[in-house]
Image 1: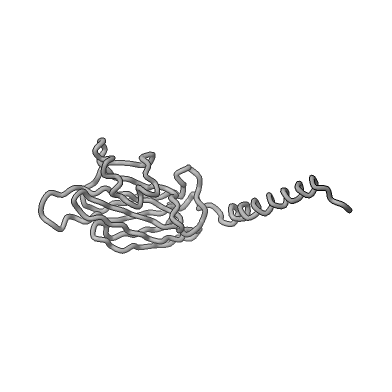
Image 2: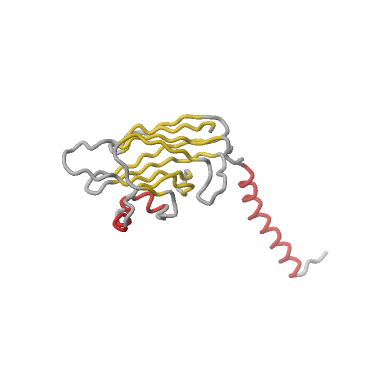
Length: 181
């Protein structure tokens, strides 16, 4: 059987299409979505000032990203709500580089204290994230003050789990619990 050039190119193109699409389809189906009945509850403390003088409330960003650093969901962003507040957003170095958008849950800066929030398993695009290993990040920066980032690896599947992170001076007592809502 002889093969002409046109049929050869057609078969080669079809084979190439199968080779490129098959791994993507397998990856998309390999991990089930996070259960809608579960959430990642995050608790952390913004430490009180340790030095006398004027205290500037910290800018804080809390977000979830993949192990390879791709943003999944910004859970909260605390900043000054006026135009001056945008000027200091870049001090949240990691969040600003990877996200850098105000199309997120944003509110005013807060006083020192303990805070809680939860991730419902949805991405910034509104889709349910797959069961996988993620990183919870909490970044805090103050004008004329310290900068700190806490990184907590979390594995989210169908079963509940607990995680904790290190203290960094500005943010302490970081814990996360993957639990039923």
